[in-house]
Image (tube, rainbow, N blue to C red):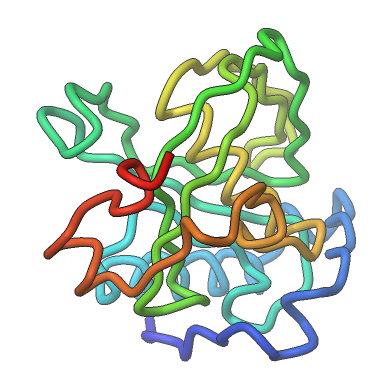
Amino acid sequence: MAVREIIRMGHPVLRQRARELTPEEITSPGLRDLIDDMVDTLAASGGIGLAAPQIAEPVRLAIIRIPGGPSRYGEIEEVPLTIYVNPTIEIRDAEEQGFWEGCLSVPGLRGYVERPRGIRVRWQDLDGQPETADYEGFLATVFQHEFDHLDGRLYIDRMQDTTRLMFEEEFARYGDATAAID
């Protein structure tokens, strides 16, 4: 359909709690159009996830597509394009793990964020039917990051140490420069 503008940190929609979609909205043609726009926008951005608030649509909707295979985070399990309507997260393993996160709405920066290691995701599909899946490791982080957008949160809000926020160019050049500071 169309590639939409990804709004950036500072836009008020990114700080709002998104509203749940009603059963009527879930099965509507308008939601299908929004999803088509989100898929096109995600593909054009090169990202792996996009929440509707990132394109200024304050509804509880996110899409995730992870190609899987080797990455800078190790071997990652593939997640085919999936649409998550009204998703919720239940923490299954509260032990924290950390990854360097980036965000399409916070372009050019990376930050080290620690989050729970294991989660259960519950959501509705496009027929309004309930779905459930469990994720661990890096995948758990991806889902927590994307669904934070639905609650008006950005990854930088979860950082415990702001010295571990850096520009992507410096991260590529120096890696985790803060690891040598201890």
